[in-house]
Length: 152
Length: 162
Image (cartoon, rainbow over all chains, first blue to last red; front, top):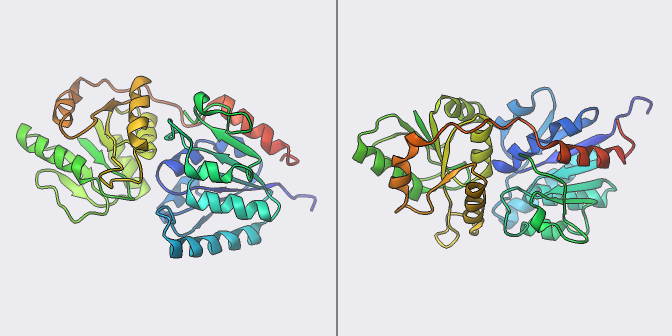
């Protein structure tokens, strides 16, 4: 275990969620990373890193969600990450809940798109996220989410 | 070239139709649109349903202006490349997305001076006419703020650190 480096499973769905996750990469230096998203073509964004694709359960279709949850669970068991970090949405929610059950520390950063109120996923991971962040100061609350800056 | 993008998840025909009609009315031939999963076809502009990441970035790099839904993937990528961007928000009531969060996103980013906004298809042609007056935006850097990166580093170090 002498060369064991802490492992972060960084999980996000497509579009803006993925783009925002990529902007956090300097904070991940020195750790083993496993990137999980919903689109194979995103592989080029993290060339040379571990990269996996799961079903896109963004529309909350129950069947797709079940398959996605199983895929996420397999990855969590395979890598046993120390930290699960997500920028949304459905796959990240699943990753955080299951990761927490498996003993990982968890980070949820809500999308900068949510300017009036935090996302439903953010509300639902409250209590399961060790670090819960919003990117808008006016949405920060006692007990989380906290405001610690933004991706831009 | 003017690049139109609606993201990969859902169509946004209301935006692309508006741009298509505007391009025809003004005789503007250099528009290319990524229109998402839809059966509707533009008649006056080049189009494709989807682009992979490399093609998407390449189209955006070539563009002199970007027209998009108010999705963060489109907005952040345009800002990273320093492209002027005009967004029109999807509406929940029209089933263009689940809720009206894009309306609030568009308004807030307009206040910050990051994007131009057409709230609906009535405003769109006028805003499109003003496109050439939009100055290239200041490029944003490739990474999150130092404040956010620092907060994440501190949290991650709490696990034992690298």
